[in-house]
Amino acid sequence: MTIIVNFVKFHKTLQRIINSTQNQLGSVPLARMHFSASFVGALFVATIYQVSGLSKIIGQYGTTIVVPCNNHGANSKDLFMTKWKYEKRDGSSGDLLVKKQDQNISIIATDDYKDRVSMDENSSLLISDVTLGDQTTFTCMIVEGNDIAEKPVQVVVQKAPSKLEISGQVEELEIGKLTTMGNCRAHNANPAADVTWFKNKRPLVADGKGIVVKTSVEVNSTTGLSTTSSILQYTAEKEDSDTQFTCVSHHPAGDDLATAPETFTVTYPTEKVSLEIISDGPVLEGDNVTLKCKADGNPPPTSFNFYIQGAVVKVENSDTYILTDVTRDSTGEYKCALIDNGNMEASENITVNYLDMSLSPSGKVVKSAGESLSLTLQTDASGEPKVSWTKDHKKLDKQPKFDKLTYSDSGLYECEVAIGTLVKKDSFEVVVEGPPVIRRLIKQRGEDGQHKVLVCEAEGSPKPSVAWSINGTLPYESSFINGKITHKLTIVPPVNLTVSCTVSNDLGQATKAINVSTLFEEVRMDKQDQSDENDQTKLVVGIVVGLLLATLIVGLAYWIYMKKSKQGTWKTGENEDGSSEESKKLEEKLEDNSQKAEV
Ligand SMILES: *[C@@H]1O[C@H](CO)[C@@H](O)[C@H](O)[C@H]1NC(C)=O
Ligand SMILES: *[C@@H]1O[C@H](CO)[C@@H](O)[C@H](O)[C@H]1NC(C)=O
Ligand SMILES: *[C@@H]1O[C@H](CO)[C@@H](O)[C@H](O)[C@H]1NC(C)=O
Ligand SMILES: *[C@@H]1O[C@H](CO)[C@@H](O)[C@H](O)[C@H]1NC(C)=O
Ligand SMILES: *[C@@H]1O[C@H](CO)[C@@H](O)[C@H](O)[C@H]1NC(C)=O
Image 1 (tube, rainbow, N blue to C red):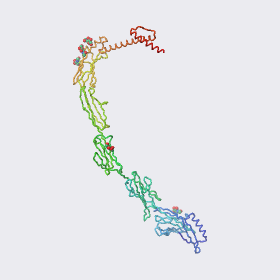
Image 2: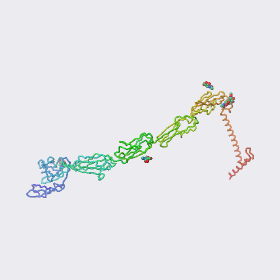
Image 3: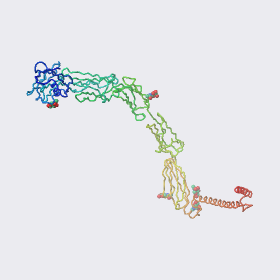
Image 4: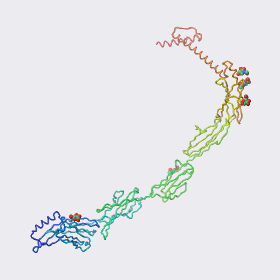
């Protein structure tokens, strides 16, 4: 750019002018001036070359910007003249305003700038409501004394995007398929904003295959502002169900903007079907069994075909089928499959456990003692059942046998068979009956010797009643157990008596008698004949004690004899007890022994 200024000058050499200009401009290398004298007298032609180094200021769109003038902070009042001009689109120069010393600022612009420009005291140019149309070079020209300076400033207008938004996004992503996920647009920025996609806070890098990003910039023909749009195409994987996608814009004139994280439903077809049998423990007859068909696709299928014992049952809006009250006939293979793809199927076998029992006899069985009773237990079960027996609620080791019934066989028999939690029970009651018999009738002497106790033991069922032929005291009756009953009667017989015990029940009766001697006579009698039973015992004891004493005496005598013969001081030719031959043999043997001992 060449500017020619004419000045009336005095006596200053060209060099001085240059020097002073350099001083004045100081560190500003932007303008270098070359003055050359020319033509007429004191008329100077000053040529100002602006060779290099435009300074640049950045203004925010829509605001008022301040374009500084390089006047070293001098007040424009003190300057001979300040003028601002700008470079038009066609390259020509347009004047904006001028201020001469002692005059007001005069706006000389005639275009759009005439209402938007002003200047402050330090000569800075103020431009309000800047738009992209203001991006050009503004030049400040000052004249001070003899010096002329010009300073061009390039104005750049920036604008951060007004908003960032995603449009046209899909809701579902089909696995393995390149899908346009949305168009992210950063609106009306200058320069155009950078738009980036993030997956779980990590930038997505386009690889041209699974991830494709198409970025374009639109410039508004009126405002010149740019809208960046970035279309993301993405191939989802199964793991992307919870992945968060975000779009972020970056711009030098503002903070980064980010869209709210978006998640997508990832859809994929079923690859595997499984059938689940839901039951608490093994399936038992009478149970309800739930069949649940599961497919791993997303969204999961809502309808299934169940194959129930040869029949196809279509279940809609559910994945379960309930078999109610299963029986042993329900045992078998069950299947489920996808409705639209029969090859996607799963099967499971269901085994229904069952247990039947039949026990004979049953109810109440009445039998006579000595008879036999046959017992049969039959089971029909899906496995080997465990059998246990109780009699009158007490555990039995094994199944009872009744070859020859006794009264003790009477009772309540219960049998339990079980397979796991499947349990069946049955029971029968055995009653063994028989006419009473007297097993024992005895008399005992009372401890004080003043009375006698009669004991009558009877057996029979039902419980026999017991009757004595005489009255006594302290009658005692034992409990009736296993068909046995014991009666006791205390008596003081005044004379020798014959006492009978009579037992009877519905089935018959029995009587037994015993002779009881009077106590008074016995007292008179010798002690040998005390109690009718004890007397004999005493006699036996006496004989035994006598024999023992005799043996002891013989043993002692033999011991003394042996001791003497061993010492060799006492020899007998004759022996009253044994033969002489025997004695000799014994002596020889003893001598042998003593010789051996001496060696
Ligand atoms: C000029 O003055 C304004 C305040 O009116 C100030 O903000 C600006 O920095 C000054 N410019 C220069 C170049 O001194
Ligand atoms: C069910 O049982 C049948 C016959 O025993 C057998 O062939 C089949 O493999 C079983 N199916 C499953 C799922 O176990
Ligand atoms: C036993 O006593 C009753 C009355 O208590 C009486 O009637 C009966 O005759 C007596 N029997 C004998 C054998 O003494
Ligand atoms: C009683 O019985 C005893 C034997 O047991 C006999 O010696 C005695 O003479 C009997 N007395 C009477 C009075 O019959
Ligand atoms: C009781 O004694 C009588 C004779 O006094 C006799 O005939 C009878 O057999 C005896 N009975 C018993 C059970 O001993």
